[in-house]
Amino acid sequence: MPALSTTAQEQLFRAARTHHHFLTTPLPAGTAEALYDLTRWAPTAFNAAPARFVFIESAAAKEKLCLALSAGNVAQTMAAPLTVIVAIDRQFFDQLPTLFPAFDARPLYANNPELAARAALQNASMQAAYLIMAARSLGLDCGPMTGFDVQKLDQLFFPEGHWSANILINIGHGDSAALYPRGPRLPFAQACRIL
Image (tube, rainbow, N blue to C red; front, side, top):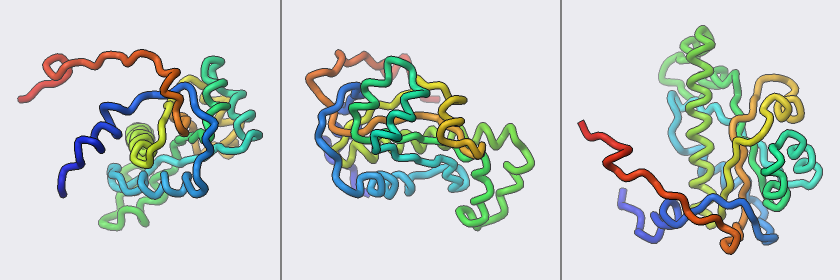
């Protein structure tokens, strides 16, 4: 597989920013489907794919979502044309016979709630990151958020109890004029080891 161009790497990583202000530019029809189609191919343990994605576009759904948000996240969420609730399916292992037919991995998680909860959180969080990269690859900007009341959001959107919110991601065309100064990153020598 050939390396991506420097331009593509810049778009996905170095030049990409977390956006808190969005332009009123609407997203093309089919954006949610395009985002999921890219995200679903990225790896998870046992191909379990425990994340579930709720794409919030309508004003009514946004108003409902705002009931669970921290005050500082309301304006940016209302301005973004799309907000995605990346949820965790607590019963993700029920899909393993279909998603991972190599052997019966379902009992590994069905019989070990602690292992299942850890695997679900780890892999659904990776899937949230994959969604961000998918959005950037489509020329969109993101503002991921964890500032919300999980219990309240779950009551509002997932009353059946099998899904639980993990991360929210605002998606649209960010207002670059409103970006905060970019924060530093740790250098290799401080963040990494080669053994």
